[in-house]
Length: 203
Image (cartoon, rainbow, N blue to C red):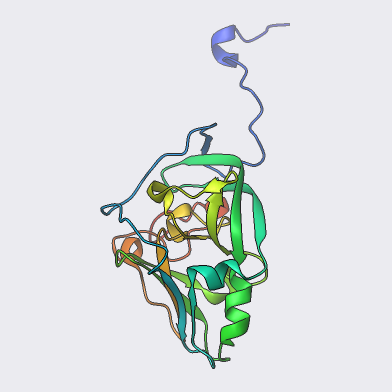
């Protein structure tokens, strides 16, 4: 009985980690800094977080008011559209559900435009910020979130590619239609689901 030579079989590969979405690799302990703008220096004594648009009670929280809310911790993985994934991350902050519950979205609200202090924007369907899927975070691995990674506060939407987790976020505006943000206008996908490899428009 004949057998294929080694050249046909090739080198056996290690099993792929099931936590890796398609097209991604495990970056290990690294945490790359990727940004399309100059890193701002945001002072927490002047920083505020606003939820407005299609809500019954537009809200604005100062740094101290935000910290007075019940806090949560996210433990899990994050995925960047540039193909790296980082396992077992730990971020601390407050659930977006808390802010939305206080603002009371109207039934007509379907989408959200997140805006940063730099003017950066990104769009999200409202349902992807609800039910324990998203947070405002100010700690990473138990330490204050470094400004290179969006400190003092960034949005965290870990089930979508990380460009949706807007750094230096200051406002969530609820809308009854989708409005593309910075990267979406420049060809990135409107949703950005890593498990469906939604990297660019048309994916």
